[in-house]
View 1 (spheres, rainbow, N blue to C red):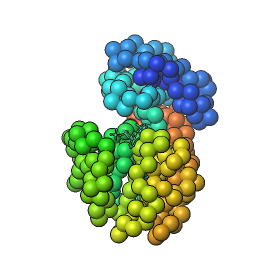
View 2 (view 1 turned 90 degrees about the vertical axis):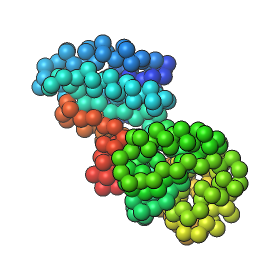
View 3 (view 1 turned 60 degrees about the horizontal axis):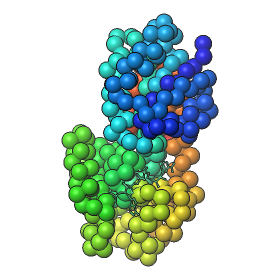
View 4 (view 1 turned 60 degrees about the vertical axis):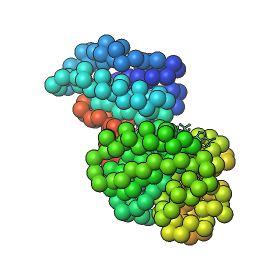
Length: 288
Ligand SMILES: NC(=O)c1ccc[n+]([C@@H]2O[C@H](COP(=O)([O-])OP(=O)(O)OC[C@H]3O[C@@H](n4cnc5c(N)ncnc54)[C@H](OP(=O)(O)O)[C@@H]3O)[C@@H](O)[C@H]2O)c1
């Protein structure tokens, strides 16, 4: 029986990237829908769950994408609400690659530092990737400093995460538009994630190489300039100025492995839900 992935995307045009990865990961066909609204989900999911017998439902799965993480979460909630008893299919959410990228980034940093005891700065912490990185670190018990050029925006995201994250992790909001704000965010930090938009440079090499106690830098910006000057896109555990560095391509391999494996695993059973935590656990299980 053919493996069909139903791609529900909140963007007008469903992501080509997500479709290519799906095919490479073993889907025989991808039915991609764009501009999907929550009230349209039930009908689309009915089409997926009522067409094959319960034993064959593992050959159908749902993938949720799109730039807007909140819109994606609403779609996932509607998808899982539509299921009942054994009449369900596996599903995964990875809006703009945020969950797989954040999982790969946090797993990379966690190889070198115990994140449950670390103080971590997330530059660009209000974006999809930064929010997921913050959530994963806070869930592990670490202290997370979410930064934005705008303190109110950082606080909004921090408040949402505080409600959402169970665990002992402390979540702080910082602005980085001013030099004093940036210095306050970096005080006593062991790990920095740079998750800003393309072109956003947060620190010069001189600034970050002088931070006392700084152990790991993960720069997710694949489009030059990097968020932290001096980090190479290919860095994968490279030591620079006593700091272990990862660049976007250094993390990207692991991200892709997690993404492909999750797609493949969805077709093994009809009841998996790959949200950010499950995707992180999958990355951990892959031993990387
Ligand atoms: N390596 C990989 O496999 C991989 C996969 C996916 C994404 N990525 C990369 O990960 C990064 C984060 O992705 P995303 O989708 O979360 O990014 P995003 O939403 O485009 O941007 C993240 C945050 O950057 C801040 N920002 C925007 N312009 C800025 C500027 N000029 N200076 C300083 N801050 C600025 C914004 O925060 P405020 O407005 O609140 O300041 C924004 O919320 C991107 O560089 C993306 O290319 C890498």
